[in-house]
Image (tube, rainbow, N blue to C red):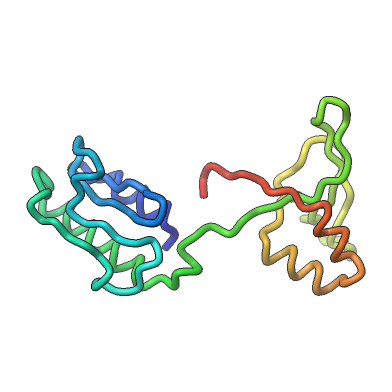
Amino acid sequence: MKIKEAIKIINSTKTVRASLGKEEIYFHADGVDRSDYFLVMPQKANNWDNVEEDFEALCSTTPKDLARVMDVIQRLLDTPVKERFPEKKYCLRWIDDDAGKSFLGLYRKTTGHSDPFWFIFGEPKLDAIFTESELNQLKKDNPRLAPAIEAMKEEVKDDED
């Protein structure tokens, strides 16, 4: 389970909210500041011993929503730390026009052609976005292109991760 997915689940409850700190996840009653949390979990925690509690701050939290929090925390603890965070995404860009909007880059073909990549000009497409592991595999498969791939890689910000 990804951390942002866990926060979304908690924030869909009626009486509990989850807030993301720099290195922690805070669980607090709805309408209460996150500094008055009833549970705080380090994002990289691997067992319940790392989860701090202050059950006096439960306020109007319902048992049903508290059970949801406990379930989500357990699911996070069961998820390897590396898998909790979204993988960075990149496009491969090497030309911008004067306005900085044109794009010349590499994207994956979604059709059955033998060559898996095409070059495109214009706005980046969804197929032009690669995860870090996909780029690493591309560099491994094409070691002569590795320096060019590294030079062209531009991080894509995704609000959904």
